[in-house]
Image (cartoon, rainbow, N blue to C red; front, side):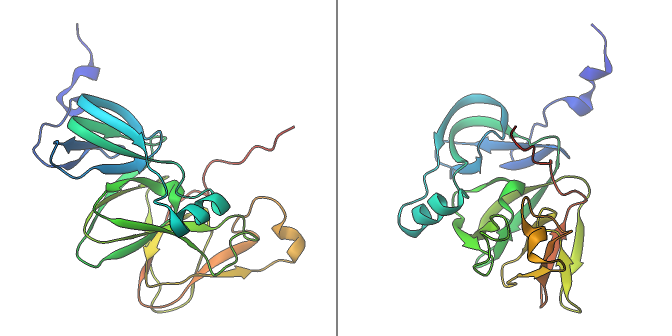
Length: 226
C-alpha cells in the first residue's frame, strides 16, 4: 500500500516529553499513573493510546459553582488520567503551548482553551461586572506552575498594551496578561447591543503593562433558532 498519507511527517512523534505538538493543530500529552492529571475542554480529545480515564471536571463548589451556574463558564471541562498518550485538537485550529512558572497568571477566553495541567489553579472571572449585558463575557483565570494549551483560529497577533489603549473584539481575544483588567467600550447606542455581541458594537479595552493575543477570526457564527 502506497500513499503520502503514510509519510513520516504524519506519524506519531515518539518523545518522552509530557506535552508535544504532534503538528500545529494537534497536541500529544503523555501520561503516567503518578503524573498530574490534565484538565481539558470537553470534546477536545480526538484519540488516545493505552489506559485512560475521562471524568467530568466539577466546579469545585463554593463560588466557582455559583459562577458556573450563572455564566455557564467552566462547565465544559474534563479530567484525564491514566497511562499512555492522549491527543487533543479543536476544529483544526492552531495550538500554542504556554509554560506558567511560579506565580505566573493568565486570563483566557474559555472558547480558546484546549488543556492545562491540573497543578494550575483556575477560577471564573467576569469583565468588570458587565458580562451579562456584553453577552456573557466571563473568562478563566489560570495561575500557578504548569503547561497551558490554547487554540487560535488562524495565526495569532500579540499586541503590547503598555504604550497606548488597545481595543479588541471580545470574540477575537484569545488570552491576555492577568494583571490587565479590560473595560467594555461601546461605540454604538444601546440598541446595537441586542443579540450576539461583536466588535462592531463593543470592544474590550486594554491599557497597561502587559499583552493581549488576538486571533484573525470572531469564531463560528451563532445560528438563531427558528
